[in-house]
Length: 276
Ligand SMILES: NC(=O)c1ccc[n+]([C@@H]2O[C@H](COP(=O)([O-])OP(=O)(O)OC[C@H]3O[C@@H](n4cnc5c(N)ncnc54)[C@H](OP(=O)(O)O)[C@@H]3O)[C@@H](O)[C@H]2O)c1
Image 1 (cartoon, rainbow, N blue to C red):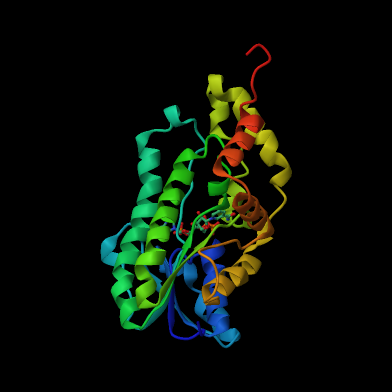
Image 2 (cartoon, rainbow, N blue to C red):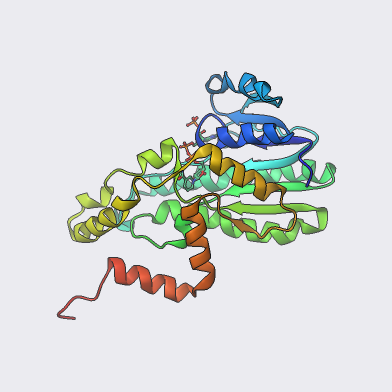
């Protein structure tokens, strides 16, 4: 597609959403950078303008339907807003954790998307870009709530990819690996599962496996450029990476069966005991 018309981004106050908003403006879109607290985006329009781009900030909380306003002329929707939560064994993760995660990551995204679809159709087509996670490709213990909320987005996206094709609306899923944002910095903490005795040895293995990856990450402007490339690529696949870690995991996932991937995780985190 040509980089013209309106692009709306959710969760543009910081991180990937902020970088994608600036990159879309740089490429030629008129950007509506939405966020819960518009004051967080005070400097954004001027930053875009310095590079010849057009961007304005609007309030939008994906969990507050009243705040969702979709502009006429929208061509691109980037569903970026997201939250993660504690890394707990499923039996110890309270239902409130699951509900909070699904509320923002899935139901919030769904509400914004269903409101945007009639306007995208009126515009003659466009792109919906959903940010999920490369952790979907790695069935790591203690990540179930976050992964499940993103898997729901992934399944929604698969159906929308076919459902919307007749209207010239292309669904794109981007699976970030490790992008240098607040969320990534927060994810480096020891897993909360360490506090639950029967799971402690496994939680220690998870921590040890993640340790070498702590310092491997991609700056958000680099990831944003790859995300906008995916949005513009009319011939591209459904799923895209935006960083080397995500690209490696996506390639490995495409080349192996689901059972091979699961067996790899079982060997890593739940090896058969000697006396089994
Ligand atoms: N960074 C990574 O390595 C990585 C890896 C895999 C997937 N991802 C995904 O990429 C997306 C962006 O992540 P990030 O790393 O940039 O995260 P981040 O730095 O934590 O930023 C999250 C953004 O989402 C916004 N947000 C949260 N709840 C919202 C709500 N109810 N309504 C509107 N906005 C809301 C936040 O707004 P406030 O400022 O108001 O809190 C913030 O702008 C997320 O969907 C995340 O799951 C990131």
